[in-house]
Length: 82
Image (cartoon, rainbow, N blue to C red; front, side, top):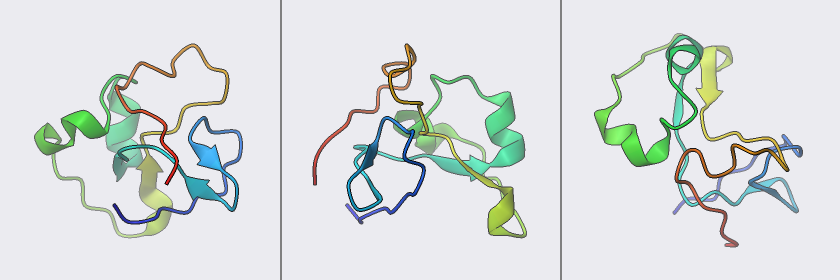
């Protein structure tokens, strides 16, 4: 898996050195993400509708879960250390 860098340090998957430690990551458009439940994430990515955008500012990391959130297990993504 490619190393993904993320500076959102209040995310459950954030790790030292601004590294994302999620086992899978789902990135989609902001518009699509706002319409999907928290449970729709990387494990369902192959069924997602393609969502083209014109700039990176219109994208959303769907895998974000706030640290200590009760929704940590909502998306079936696990935290690993790579």
